[in-house]
Length: 492
Image 1 (cartoon, rainbow, N blue to C red):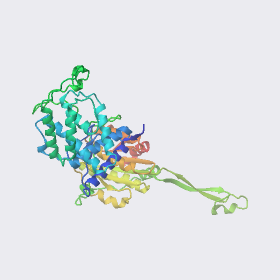
Image 2: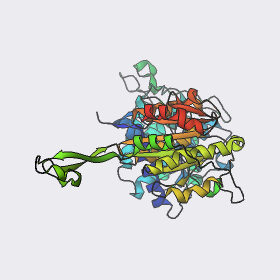
Image 3: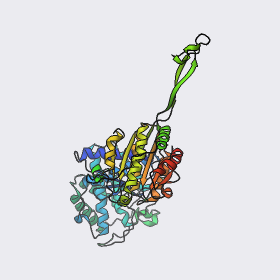
Image 4: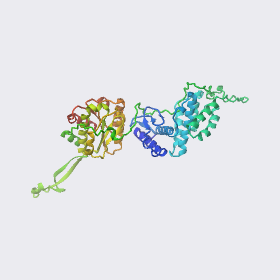
């Protein structure tokens, strides 16, 4: 079966949602609806939460399609559903029924729009998965709402036959609904029909009734419909749940990018040590420069005339020279800079370390981007921007906010995945652990498996526990020249 890498699935779903956003809500560029977290799918009406997984996770094709259906399902809630106190019920049974009607209606609206080709097939496959993932006790009345969702997606099972006429009568009403208010009325109608006494059916002579549990089909035996305010639902979740075969991560991931002004204060004047060690420059150039070395070799019988050997022309014809090149590997680097509030006390060593590494990479003509992060991330320097134009920003950087290093590292690796260079490296400058060190460690390892190593540069702090063996502690800028290159060589 065809499969995809985790980052391929995430990028595809992100593209689908953003495309759908532009079609359903044109011009609303500020709406950034996706967050990757845990193993479920849900929305609060603004942000869509989808299951989180590693970039190198292997996602089978059928799981990828289910994730697409998850995303479109939650997008339907964001686009079409109304969220407010008037849609919350003290009657848990009625609340579940309203949720089921809402699901059927908004999925139908997406399909009818014809803006997302194949959405109907995706919703059908998602329904099949929800029905087959675990046995369903159709005798439990709290599963009636789940049965309604299955019916609305064109699926059937062995639930009580008395439900089918009610569901069939509700479908035209759902089709004609204009929104969540109408759906609430429809849900109440369905509940009222269910709470009516079942019609009396005389059993056929000689044949047991199809609704008789003694007939060997216990799913036809539907328990009493719960009364108002009954909180004991215990039914199958109506909203889909999901866990990839590759496993999911508990950490939240939302690669939200803000403007660089969030980290720039024009009134600041940070001290930046611009005295970069010659050894650091030389070693970085040797490691990262595209053409590491070139020169001329003499003593050839053809090539370019070597004027220094013309004196021996009468005795030897080897008076020509040839140019040679020893090429390195094309490289690209992201400098990931922690600008959380805790960096205030170490801002000078931080910006000096960033300058030392960045200037050395610039001297080696290595495309380098600079990303700052705290609560969110910001691109301070693009790959194409000249290093000299960026340097004045180092003096204006101002720490603020929390340390969401996991999100920032994901974003830095995503930037490098779009590059064509053979060698891609992240330098992460930080002074300690962020909100989810275990997730950062997992993401570092995932990046290494995808060919994007991360070098942790601890400013006055040992970050090896988070970033692994490819990390160094920098207490003085001179440390970069004496210890950092050993780790750089290991990672590169």
